[in-house]
Amino acid sequence: MRVWFNKSFSGTHHLVQALKADPSMFVIASHTVESAMLIGADQRAFEEKKLTGDAYVRWALDFAAENRVEVFVPGKEVARIARARAVFEERGVRLLVAASPETLTLLGDKARFYAGFDPAICGVLPFRVVTTVADFRAAVAALSAGGRVCMKPSNGVFGHGYRSLVPRAPGLEKILEGDVTSLGLEDAERLLGAAPEPFRPLLVMRYAEGSERSIDCLGLNGELVQAVVRRKQSGTSTQVLEDNPRAIAIARAATEKYGLSGIYNVQTKDFGGVPHILEINPRPSGGIHVAMASGLNFPLWAVRLVSGQCAPSDVPAPRTGARVSQISQALVIG
Image (tube, rainbow, N blue to C red):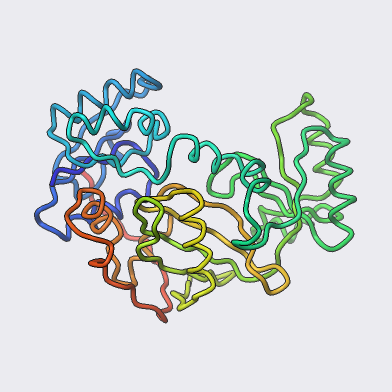
């Protein structure tokens, strides 16, 4: 089976290495930076940085044909590639994409996603969308009456732009201790006031104090096949692989509602002792290698499922109960 990973997030190398556990898998990896070529791939290729949009899709179609790709796992230009699914499949290429183009766009816009999220699945934290300083002040006044608030961009990844809003700016000691997520309300107003209005949409939300969980999912056409629940332990690199039926039920309901498939991630955080949705990432999470400590080889089973080599009932259940930590590792790449 010839599987191609194009340019994507840095954690892709974990997927490549896991897929190589099956010697029948031939892995192709491409990237715009030669030094980022993925370790463990059987074949590596270079992508032109300036190649984007429909031109990139045409290049991907040609590349897949030239290299006899059978399963394509896109990161770059994933929505455009998903729109061309029929063309890829006509050429014998299966796409490992988590959702339809429309759903990919929806999940990337947290304001729209929260507004349309079904509360029967789980709770949604109180929030307001702001694009002006006046909006911001009103949102903080309305939401902070019941507790702390935070803000984050409506579109973003890796928590970029997230700030916990505090009455006063963090002191020097907090900054020197590494606090990069707190922002004083006056500082926030000053920064927003310096931006042209309307500025980029921001969400002002209630801050959730409880446990955060990352649910790594393996699905097929709206059916949850298996999932690993990771409970993060604040202030440490340790995560617990939980046996958590409530979290699994949330992931299953979200999978059905959004027609999810392949490898994707559902994140929740407890508020008042009850899980609330944070986001659904329609791609492998940055912690997928931690989830694979459960024994579930996500990319291998995802490729087998999408290519019809196995049925959902063939996929083994992951192990739970382990406490997992991470260490960095030096790899010689040239």
